[in-house]
Amino acid sequence: MRLRQIYNSRHTICLASRPERYVRTRMSLLPIDIRMLVVFVQVTLSLVACFSPTFNEEVSLASLSKPKLNYLHAVSTNRISLPTTHISYFPVPAGSMGGFLGVTIKDYPKLYYLKGSSLKGPIEGGEPIPTIPGLESFYGFVLGNYTGQPLIVIYFPYLSNPSIGGSDLLVFSYDVASSSLQGPTIMKKILSDLAVSLYFSITDPSITANDLYLLGLQLRASILPTEVYIDTFILQKSTNRYYELSFRMDTSGTVSFNLNLVANRSSGITYLEFNSSPFSETTVGRYFYSPASKKSYAQVYQQGRYWTFYWDEERTLREIPLQGKVSTILSSGDLLCEDGRYGMLYSSDGRFQYKFGLGTLSIPYELYLNGTPTIVFTEVIDQRAEGGQLFYETYTLPTDDLSKLKE
Image (cartoon, rainbow, N blue to C red):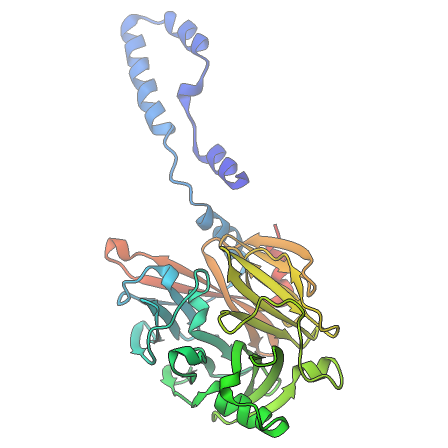
């Protein structure tokens, strides 16, 4: 509302709002022909001056933040006819143009990639998958990156849901030097090929893939530029036990078991048991692990809103009242959320710190650029209604400078 008041005070001048008695007094002193001319001029000016350009709060909010960001690059395409709400843009974190476009068409995920201003694809796989309102953009794709290059996207058309026939995992990367798609690097079944063979088959050979359900998956950068971590949140259905397992994948696609995150927090404890849990094998959500705080987070969309939970060394599931969806867990351990208009920063235990204007901007991820934790922002500019193109502009900001956007 404050933005609207400022905008209107600067751009709207309405002569018709002058006191009527004042106008009559001044008019009575003039000859009739002059008075008629003045009336005509006043009516004309009133119509023009009372007109204010359409106020767009999202554009205004973005315009407050963009001058404080570092412009990186822009890409464009006109081949996709979907509304922008059905498209997720994953930019390459480099000055050269390129990246991925993830789209959902009739509950069917497809992955495109951009080479300069040319759109390639789609890369297809799997059957239609169910989606939940508010989570479509994140259901079929998981974005991560190596601390160097290239960018990596994991695409799983089934999300390891046995009820719809599979648990395929496809891994693609983007070679910045050649501006081309690489992959799929690996084609695996995330539960049977990773969780079971690399961990459960060693510690408990009786556990099968059918008894496990992948509730969430996160890609996390390693200190080494040649590898990335895959953190998983897994439900064992027969016992209601929850496991958090981390795997390491190198640039060749080789995956190996890295760490049991539960044991890393609580020595001797290898799994979680929650007395009351919102998670089940029908739950679709997002999962995050923060090595900085050793806390884990899960966000689910139910009853028309987001519900966010976290657990730590005490292994107690706590709900935290975050506003909007979690964009990422920053390298500092803070939570970065967005609600469509504002970005909000919370501490690792969910205490609100400050908000900043996003508007038409969105935040796909934080990553390391030249060793510096950096937040990436994107903005979609849709000019297709006028026969134009769909533009995605990319900006960056060092994470330590985020407070500069504070309102």
